[in-house]
Image (cartoon, rainbow, N blue to C red; front, side, top):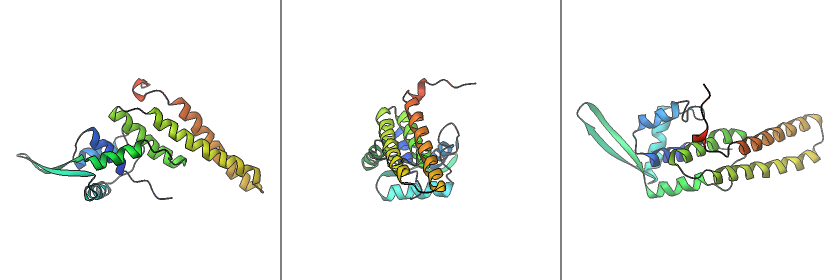
Length: 180
């Protein structure tokens, strides 16, 4: 399984508002934004920006200031917007717990940032988890030894927990009050 990349997340951030690299990096470092989901260095971010620009999914415009160095402000193109929408509403997301923690939560963050419908995103993720759960429930019937049973039971438990959690998050994030 390939390591998740933040390409679509960056497209979503830029769809929200054009930004330069350091503004984007702040979003990935802030625990109240994407910081709990992603670990991204400055060089990784600029590598992704270069890749997205070469693919024609973002454009960069130099902005000059009297009291600061030249900055490149990036914005998303129609090609990037198409990729973003396909990612947001992916009908076959991964049911891997790691990918749920990184990619699914990133989808929800971007959906809320863009103020777009999130129920379909949750439904698609829940369906993927249920489908994967059914695969492992069938596997459980075929397991032969104690260690294999423990492993499959652990995965089944994780998927059940994810499905229960997905049922609980169907309310908009903006309506959840922070506990102090």
